[in-house]
Length: 136
Image (tube, rainbow, N blue to C red; front, side, top):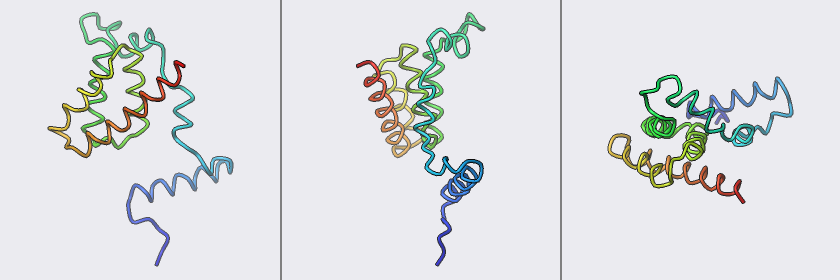
């Protein structure tokens, strides 16, 4: 038997961890959630500038763009944990309610399937819990 992972994603993660260790042995226990904590959200004004209607006055606002991004990430199977959590945090910062976030994800169950929706909801719940902890 071999210790080589059979799942291509697991193999990629093992390779990435080995590469990180080669660059810096302190990265042996790298945790992506720790990386997320370096920039949990950007200010609402910055989001409106980059993702909102500052550059396109008649376009979508940041909240709507972020809810659409969340829907797209859910459609991809909610495989990008960090991206889903960050998008949820940014959507909250841009004024999205928990109900709007849940509805954006829930709507995708029709297209992405129940497992993708469930995973996205779990990640969203984690991100919203993290956000509530920051306010205390």
